[in-house]
Length: 477
Image 1 (cartoon, helix red, strand yellow):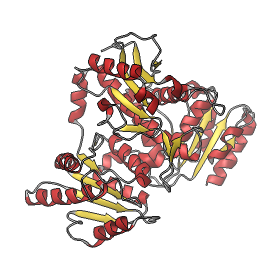
Image 2 (tube, rainbow, N blue to C red):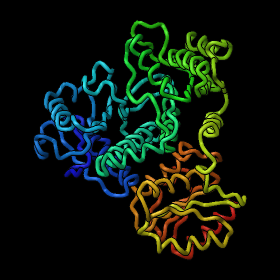
Image 3 (cartoon, one colour):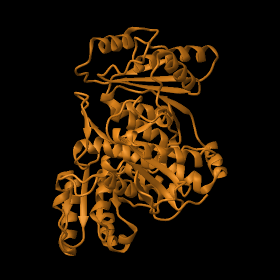
């Protein structure tokens, strides 16, 4: 199928007002970041169009858009025009076999406050959450440390999910069905308390990148009896459940005295026993955070039960170790040896030389310096299927010892995206720490804006930058 618009972002006009701190409105900045993310995963620039409730630029029927992203706020929900636009799109996309609407939550809304059409969908929360206090507010600084942990993690998830939907729409259902044959196990990744939602997100993304189907796919219901039915149904489809337990007890559904975190564990134990009796495969991994801060008495009691109660432990391996170690155990449980190919078995150090295709010629002398110094040089792929190109990038992020981002003709935004990729490398399955990171620029551009990114800055004229690169490699060794 072909569409004039790849992604239509619909929003309430007041949510894109320019503040003193930002030169552009929130939605305009969101569009710019999403465009950059999708360009990375798709390999081509998507046509993204903004549509406020008063905008009449797009077709009235909205049948020229492949995907709609709704930016949810109280203003959106109270706008009859915004809700009408949403309903119009649902009518034209009713026969589609895949989800074509994505909800981005700009400011906190309860499930009941959201439009009925969108309540069951997984949301992409783009607001700031203080994990210590639970206080939520909108982001004003999109490049702060907190934004890197939350806003950008959700942005990556949204980009990948839209990418999947666009591929299916553009390539047709047949190719999608062929691809699904190669998907492996279905895994239940239990919902967590708010304090470790970021950690859950990293594990979810890694599992999906390796082709696993991760449940639950929808927001869990708010009523106790209904939530148990949905969780049990999802668990029945799975061969592994993963539970992350932190300081927060989690939300308690209506009519229940247990949190969703607690209920999921109880039902997983029951499913494990049933499947064991029926000689069906089912494993459970439970991770308990090492530093439990400000936990309620109820949460402390739940953790003690997990550690001591044989019924709660049914079929489970319980670990209280660093999260990185736990992720390695998950990988060992799931990933086959060929999926870890690309690791340098020789014991030599490898450097990922991250650069764009436009700088292919300019980067060659620096690549030669790396090779002469005895380093294995990992480089991005620029040819082949888009998914293969992205997979090569992720394999490199997983395996390098050190990384050098090369800035030639590319702009600062491209560099920022690559810096973020390095920050997110643990989420792609790294088993070792990053030993060194550098930003290498030809010429003498102003790189002060990148000094707080924990990067060694290497710049100057060609001769000087080459000398500085050699010094960096000596320190690396």
